[in-house]
Length: 198
Image (cartoon, rainbow, N blue to C red; front, side, top):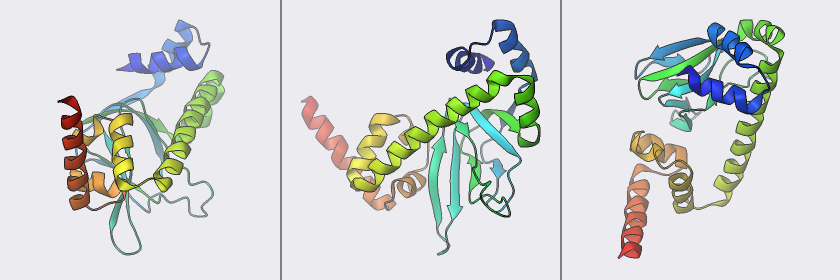
């Protein structure tokens, strides 16, 4: 599993193999069972994560009492809660493992210590966050401007495996539609696709 991280380090830093190994030896990798809650809405985050295997759902209960899914993190994605701007530093989201998952766990209280010890690790983390943030901005802009059907088509194109990994009502929430609408749109898209193949 740590081989995936080594690939990231090779791509985003100029660390030698020995330096990479020193970091890998210090990194904590944990296995979590399906259903494990990593963070609850309202709690102060103490850890950040990087998904080596599995799927983690980000969701929250809104003011109307509805549960809204805002993201799914899968392999090779970092999970960070940016809440430093809040006075109480509490999380607006809950993070739940939708599958048995293997995650790199980064305790936030030792983050600066790790960066001081391994200076290129901070640069690598920043690049990962910049890549992720840029992608989120693009996806959000496209999401706002698109129809429900376009959102589903984009998801099928960008993350084709996700649709079979998460419950349909959560996927519908993530796409901003009802489960019934999602079912109808999926049938129409699959029917159009089948007709094109004939």
